[in-house]
Length: 88
Image (tube, rainbow, N blue to C red; front, side):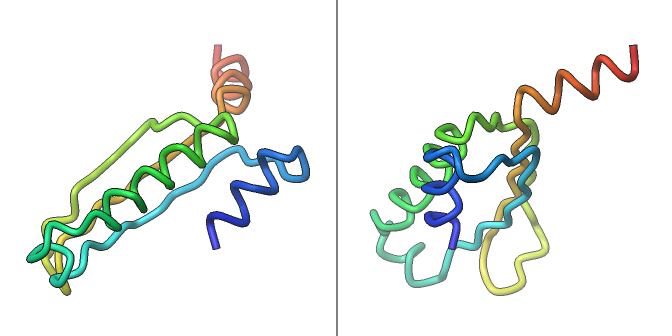
């Protein structure tokens, strides 16, 4: 789903101010040191960057329910500037 979002955003059909994503690493991928997992994370980061989104927060989830996961929050620079301007 995110690939379609990134494509639309990169084409100028969609504007995004903020995206929060939780990424889960499967047990199978942990055992194999799966390259597809690395590729998926690269796709997430490069897609967000193509939409002019910057990573502003990440958090590793240590609950360990179903495997390790991490939460990533991206924000557009324009949105960050608007918020900062409104507060200052």
